[in-house]
Image 1 (cartoon, rainbow, N blue to C red):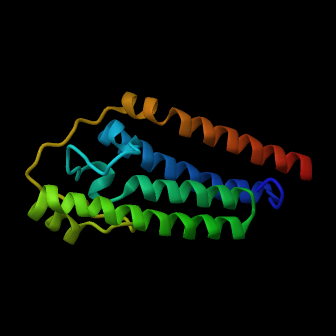
Image 2 (tube, rainbow, N blue to C red):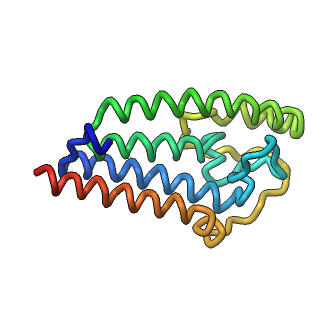
Image 3 (cartoon, rainbow, N blue to C red):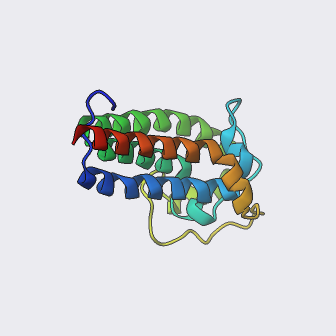
Length: 170
């Protein structure tokens, strides 16, 4: 991005909202799902979360990541970077999701099957899912912000770098 980026005020203005929407989706999801979203060990989870952003798309954190990285490519005015980021993360997350879905099908059985019929894997729908009879964790915005602090810092640094490139290259 630093080598091939040619940001302009237009590319920054077009890409920054994509980054912020992606991070907003992530933050909303983390505020509900909590620290279980930050695990690097075996696939697992205490809840089948079906509210908040999970009522619109089964994998809101991954959708948010794809938007953040794609938006960064747009901000830097590097269409190839934006396209590569989109494809790379879509493929990577598709593989990860297959393992997560296997766990959820086993743990939550019929309830997860019903959820999958109504809520798409990666393409959000406007109409929220209202099914399910299971407990849901409470939304905790403070916990979400604490969990997302490094991501928020990275977005801030990235934005400053891209704006700095724009200033230096005009």
